[in-house]
Length: 442
View 1: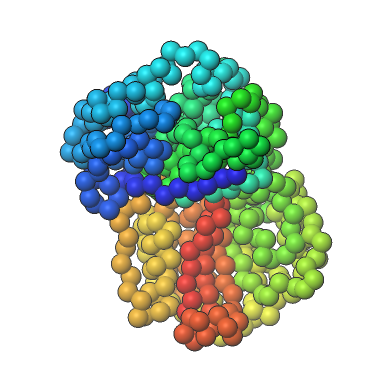
View 2: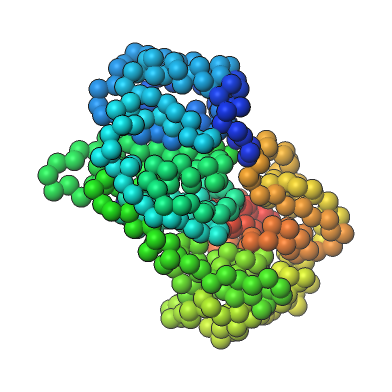
């Protein structure tokens, strides 16, 4: 069972040192308002960690927290805020563990039978994201999220874990430290009764991303042995090789499952599975859908050949490292919307969201392009420098700049066209996390 939380978060640049952060003034929340703490929950500690720009950990205490206290955080140092919190709720004590600020019940620090002191083996994984990290964290408590967790908190950062054997607490701190922009929290499952025979886990472990202001959590129990080693081994992905995109190996899907290709609609996952940029022009899915072909372990070339066999309405081409799959007839249509001429474009290190908004303004003049605020140090950025020419050039340039992004174009049906005020075309972008951005245009 998983749950998604929305945290108040400020921008959190990488490389922040905890000792410096302890004496640094805490900023405002993501709404530009002073951060005020009145209770201790995963969301509140996540907000504090983001505003302080330092990785943190939090273990909630038993019921009985004093009420009526308030700590105004913004403008004060993190050290003084932490001291004020433990003064308001004396059950807690904070410590600096190698750059990770951890707030736990005072008694928990010395209770050797505490679940966080259970032993766990080494954790070594060459390339993980936030979703992988949560799966590993769940494994620390004997849970397996292999097939249920795929969102990377909108955080494209990949990082390496090389943690020696130790305790669960040390592993949690090691994970958020290795990333540099995460905070972990363990607390009772919110607002849920746990009577005899309840299938709802009594606790929730969560990770928050300070760069994006998002968090995910999953239910756990505290009486299960860690099973990280076996889970991590089961998640190993065939590593796509560098070199020509057509010769790269197709790995697993983002959630760790084997990639089974049923048709062009599945190609959005190929960008991550093969670590390539890709573009797709979609036709309505065939009915009934083909049985599908497992392409994990195949080359990109063989995966595309398999797709053409599944649905011969399509053909593919390579454009300087970008694979583009389109209907056969679309390639020869000079009046096609993707052939629409646009002016020369030069974009330098902007977010994908800004890139989508810029394209919207090109295709819908009434839509005014206004760059968003800085998305943070870990938000992936794209660039493009293309001459006057077809829209397809710009789409491919942005996908190529990102490296693992999929653009998708499709014609809207009559119902959707009516909903979008007569606009018949849709352009969208899909990232590895499964999240998409897009717009309809005339």
